[in-house]
Image (tube, rainbow, N blue to C red; front, top):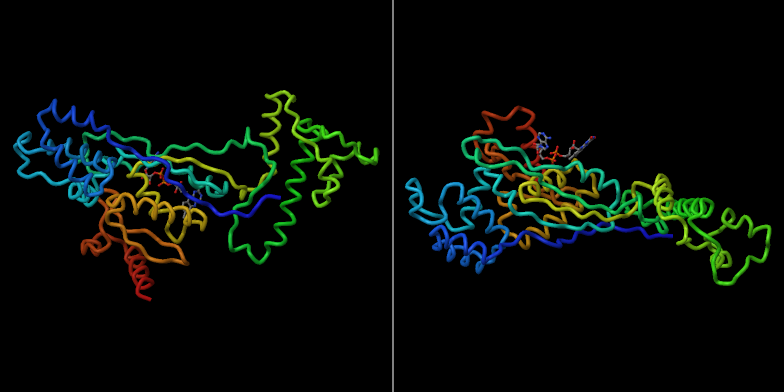
Length: 349
Ligand SMILES: Cc1cc2nc3c(=O)[nH]c(=O)nc-3n(C[C@H](O)[C@H](O)[C@H](O)COP(=O)(O)OP(=O)(O)OC[C@H]3O[C@@H](n4cnc5c(N)ncnc54)[C@H](O)[C@@H]3O)c2cc1C
């Protein structure tokens, strides 16, 4: 039988600067002064992806260096520029850098929720953002249930079910048996070619029906995958069998999110209203990203809720108000204000 598992997040890639190309662009446009700004930011620990977002932000206003736009009287270093973009809600520049993750040992409960995230939030302030184009914020690749066989069903465990773990361990084996027996009957498996013949012919004929996973005697007679079986049919049957697989079946999802989408998804999926598994996953995402990219979660506040962080307070749009901005009193509804009061009370408790 498979194992009870917990999800794990891996950061496997992120957007980087092609330095000869950036240098070539700066040289060709007489903005080489920015190269030192760029090197200073990198030496100070900013990633290429973050620096790239600043390049695009500064490109909007011709503010890479002084002297290209008479309206610009001072130029900011990259980190100040990035933080200012987050504070003003100039979110579209953050669509230029994406982070690539693989989440392992995650359930289809989680992946169903994850794939609802499609895009970065839309543009808000036409003045600031009229030269930006909307783009897709998230890309996915997930274990194929159509192609991958269900030999072992690892189950992504929820601690809520701890009191009945023994029951689940037992019954899950029955699901695996059902998969096995179906594969035997429909031709995806054949008798083992280990020279062993089942001692009792009457049981042998029916072996695939009587197979008992508990009995080591039977295990050696276990039917093996029949590679000669027509590939297309194998795929069709594998796909059909997955109907028996539980939502909690462990699988993997690869996902790529741009920074803008990431900030949005981290906030909604670490919130206390989200399901525990996705909260756990986005706690991991938050920790991993925060360690490597110090500007990405600019403005974020965190508080504990039932052992996991809730990340909140990041400005997503030019029209979003920071909860500490006194204008909230004028703009927010009574229930929005009450929610904030409750949240602060929880924090102080
Ligand atoms: C706690 C919780 C409970 C949930 N419960 C349910 C449920 O019971 N049933 C259910 O079906 N779903 C449920 N969902 C899923 C939810 O409805 C969304 O589908 C999911 O959170 C995706 O987020 P998003 O809409 O912000 O989209 P994202 O793709 O993450 O997009 C981000 C933002 O971009 C903008 N955007 C994206 N696409 C468009 C578009 N096509 N048009 C206009 N603007 C766009 C929106 O501003 C959106 O907020 C739940 C989500 C959470 C967090």
